[in-house]
Each structure stands twice: as structure tokens, then as C-alpha cells.
Image (cartoon, rainbow, N blue to C red; front, side):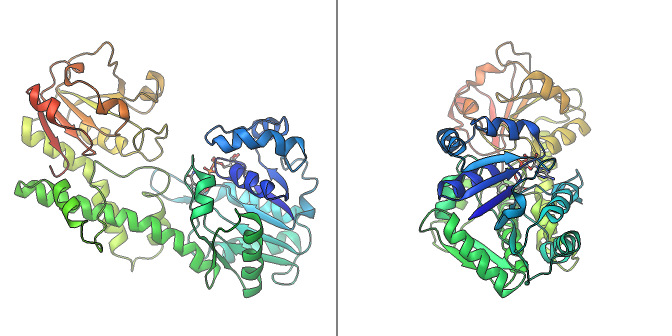
Length: 425
Ligand SMILES: NC(=O)c1ccc[n+]([C@@H]2O[C@H](COP(=O)([O-])OP(=O)(O)OC[C@H]3O[C@@H](n4cnc5c(N)ncnc54)[C@H](O)[C@@H]3O)[C@@H](O)[C@H]2O)c1
């Protein structure tokens, strides 16, 4: 098959490499000239997967894989299948911005050959494939759905850094805008994914779109429940981590962990794709509200222990959205920062993955653990490995350590006479 992958990002490039590794001819298209040139020079523009580093040189050298931008889409019109993995971005208020993927869709339509299957993999609000991209593709190409153009959605469920392993083990969910589109998309993935990977058809593109929103929103709702349990436990002097661990020994209980907030590209974002336009949904927006409220809960917890934060130095440990990643998209560090500032605190930030300039640009006074200044309260926001082994003596004059991820062994803090409090602990 000739396959075009539109968007050679952290997910798109591994997909292109996977398809080329199965023997198909793959053309990657990206608006970023650096990505295109680097790939065509036989190097991987992304180094977050060892498989990319290992396979790209040979696939490019043998001509199985090449890249271009829209200024020279030669070969695109011969593609049997086009896979679209260009992000849909959201603003700070989680309003959806389709501009990048709309632009990609217009270029796809303008260059589309006959009888092509177009599959969107980018996470989308339900109905987007059929009602937004369907007309853009048919009007822009002059082709007719289910006659000489086929259209499907298949959510990408892999995680960056382990894409190739996830492609082997997660079933590939596929739903077309017609039975024939579904059939063609299933056939495509059987031939392009690792041999033996399960490909599972669902009834429609909408069911496939909703599947991804269902699984990500499930995690947000589950965490919100864990956060409610944590607040209940805190009111009743119980350690919620012990309770969750005990509850989950029953096989039907899968309670997630509470924490100072939920961040990243997916979990705090995709619930909005589900409920922004549907006021009938009640649990997902409430879960969002609960999870967004954990920064304020953390500040209340601190003030219960030490009184007003007005004028106090508070250190946020970890600005990334979770431990040991260099990614701070929608990080709950920012909500925590705002709550601490509103309480009058001087807010310092530390993160081994970011330099002082970046920390300052996202509203934190950079803190140097090698040349530390006095701090009254430290809050673990991202459980980077470095913080697990950090001595309490590393932070002078510390009186309270808040373990926002319930990730730290408290013994060292107890021994150092520094108060320790977790979330619901
Ligand atoms: N990153 C993840 O962990 C993850 C996991 C599962 C699913 N996804 C899905 O994959 C999507 C893409 O994620 P990513 O991490 O690969 O994003 P990314 O930002 O790494 O890559 C997106 C690429 O698209 C390119 N692009 C933008 N506009 C374009 C256009 N008009 N034509 C061609 N290329 C264009 C960009 O230059 C960039 O290289 C996400 O929006 C999400 O729906 C991501």
C-alpha cells in the first residue's frame, strides 16, 4: 500500500515508521520544514522512542519512508490511505480550536487522489469526522463519499515514549462513516499494524470518536472520586491511601489515586470534548470541577496547619504535569500557583526538567536546590524521582511538607521534625 501520514509529530512519526516497517510505502507530510528535512536526511526528528532511532535511517535509505510539506505534495495523490494525526488544540478555557486540523484537511482535499481511504486518528468531539471533515473533503476534492472517497475515525490510544509497544497490545478501534469505510479501514490496519494486533470495528465513526472520550473521561471521573474520598478521609482523620489500597483488593474496585490536580494534554482536556456542547452530562463537568478544586483544597490544608500564607515562602516541587516527564501542558502546577498567590504567598518553583528561564516564564520564582533560600512550606506537585530521595534538610527552615502525590516516604520528614501531610493523609 501507499500510505500518507499527515502530521509527523510524536505520534505521527512512529505510525509512519510502523507502516513502513510492514513493507508499505509511506509519505509523511508536515508543515514543519525542520521535521521534513531531518527525516529526509535519514535521521529521526524525535528521539523519544528507541525504535525511531533504530529504524528511521534504513527506512529512509531504502525509500520506504520519505517526507514532504504541502508546498510539494508530489506522490500524495497516489496514496491508498491517508492517516491524519494533526492536533486539535484547546485554549486555556478548554475551548476547542480546529484551525490546524482544518488547514490540514483543506490541503488533503486539494491533493486527494481517487478511491482513497482517509482515517482521522486525532482525538475529536463526537460527530467531527462525519459532519465537519466529510463536507470539507468532498467539497474540496470534488469526490463522493463511498463512491471514490472513504472516511473513518480510529482513536490513537498509545502513549508517547512507548508507541510501538502500545500498538501491539491495545486493540485498534475503528469506525467508518459507512460500512464500506469501516471495512476498508479494518483491512488497512490489519495490514499496517504489528502482525497479530487486534483490530476491532465499532458501529460508526461516532462510536469510535466517543470511545476515546469515554476512556479519558473515565480516568478524570475516577480521580475526582478519589479526590472526594481523600477530602472525606482528611475530615475524619483516616489515611485514604490505605483505604484505596484495601478497597482495590476487591476485584471490582479500581479506584485511582487522589492528588493536587490533574494535568497533561488528555485527561483535563478531552472531557470538554464530551460535555462542552451537551448540558445533559452531569458527572464529567462535576469531576472537572472537583479536580480543578484540588489546588484550593491544598492551600486550605496548608492554612489549617500553619495559619495564613500571607507573605510566606512556598516552594512548588515539580512544574511538569506528572513525574519524570518534561511536559507541562495544562499542568495542575499552574492552578496551585494561582491559589497560593491568591493566599498571599511568595511562590517559588523547582523542576529538574526545566531551567530558571522557563520557570519564570510560567510564573514561578526559580528555586535553586543547590543554593537554597528559606522556605516555610514545600508542595510536591510532580513526583519526579529526584524528590523521592531528597533530604528534608535540602530546604532550610521548612516547617511543612505537603505530599501532593502521596508519593514520598514520610519517615525522613518525621525524623527531621518537619510536619508531613498528604492528600487525604
Ligand atoms: N501526544 C500524546 O501522548 C498522544 C497520545 C495519544 C493520542 N494523541 C493524539 O495525537 C495527536 C497528535 O499528537 P502529537 O503528540 O503527535 O502532536 P505533535 O504536536 O507532536 O505533532 C503534530 C504535528 O502535526 C504537524 N502539523 C500541524 N499542522 C499541520 C498541517 N496542516 N499539515 C501537516 N502537518 C501539520 C505539526 O507540525 C507537528 O509536527 C493529538 O492531538 C492527540 O489527538 C496524542
